[in-house]
Image (cartoon, rainbow, N blue to C red; front, side, top):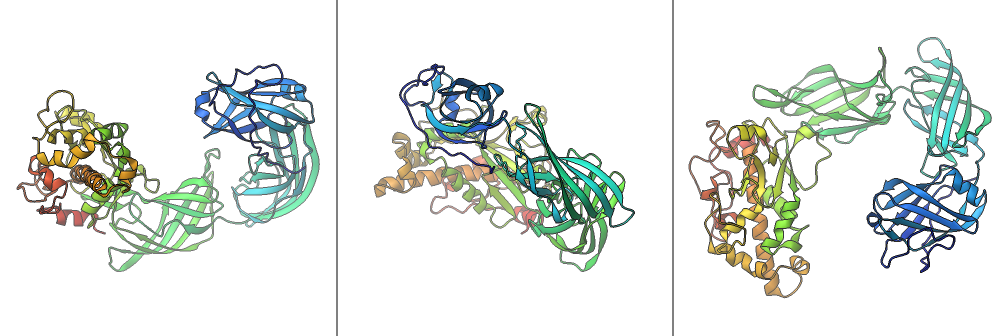
Length: 616
């Protein structure tokens, strides 16, 4: 019997369940069942996956009521996947409806709500015959997920399927030996009955490449304890050495993650004593210099699967500079051979050497801007509540523009292509939690000259900073901008760190504070004069936030006065448009880029310093 996926449209009914009325009464506008998916037929342990509208309104422990002519059952929730909820068929369900096809009504209840009824025709069976029609063949790798074709494959909730390999293994080096290995088989897809996956572990050949010849015999044990064994099927296949296929990036900066694709990698968490190394040998030209012999050097990537490992280009500090641990350089180019080395216990197996070219790019400062809930709660105070989703992009553009000449990468999503040691975080919130009216504060410990900490977190609280007598909470605090207004509409009087009122602020923001911008106006739709007012306020606000982020980021990079004293955090002399001037030297008109003001830029030693640590 072939596997089937049941996708049924919902049918609403105004009455309670037909048999027994076990579900609470339906409430208008309650969530509804949109689709149902399951294996066919349903066995004891099978799961029904229902897609629900407004699923969260049904609470954390919904129940499924199934009713038909033969009776009614209630099933508990056993799984969650987004808007989907799973409910597991039990022995009572089979006893109630029998091993046949039944026309049923389904409803989900929880948190005092019940969905309208959903009509479904479901087929139940006590068991499904197990068979194998497509055993492994050809070339395979260790840790491959080998597709087996046949019928009767069970989901883990329905029982177990095991593949027993009995025969002779002939390694490429050394004498042949007898093997008798049992390995689990899982469905190839959630509801597949006709396709199973066999994960080929080193239990078969101890990690050596070679050839297997013998029989594969499937057996299954269902939830009721019944065993099936359709008999052995002849098979033969070859396990080839580990090999490399491709890199996700042939150019990467320090702390960047490089995904390496291939086959035969070892190191799964459930296989203790197994690992994979990459042995690299060739030549490396550091920073444009002559190519010099390199290696052999072994790097240890992180195991993901038999077909993927991830290499982190780890950073190491040497004499006040960040270099790559693998190459001992700020940047350069490698050419040579890479060989995967798999290890089982104390035995190493060399895979296939592969030509390998890789460029270490100059250091990049990745910056993740994290907008906190308090930021969005404060947006309406500026009349810009409708700008959420757009204002973040404008802030990122502003920060990126200020650092455009340097290797700085500003992001709105937390990076997944760099290690946690490879990117900084700046939190952007609403009120100043220090209570002193700051626009922003870098609470990272000490002046990081040389930018040796790519991972600074500007935000949250820092006990080390507090111990030195400085404010403990860091980040960007947008509500403090309101003190530039003659009517900030904030509780209490302006704190010591707040700026003096500036008429320009009210000129820009009063039109939207008195009449909040709409989403259409944020998009540039509507009456031209009003759209211009909204655009001016939105761009000014994004510029204020972006300037503050850029300033606090500058501190975390080791600015200002990088070659001065450890407590020198701002430019020694104030200048027009200088980002790292003290806050009182940066008037509102300059921060919002009013006509006639000097564009924001880096001054004094900062450009040379940033070029040294973050050149492109």
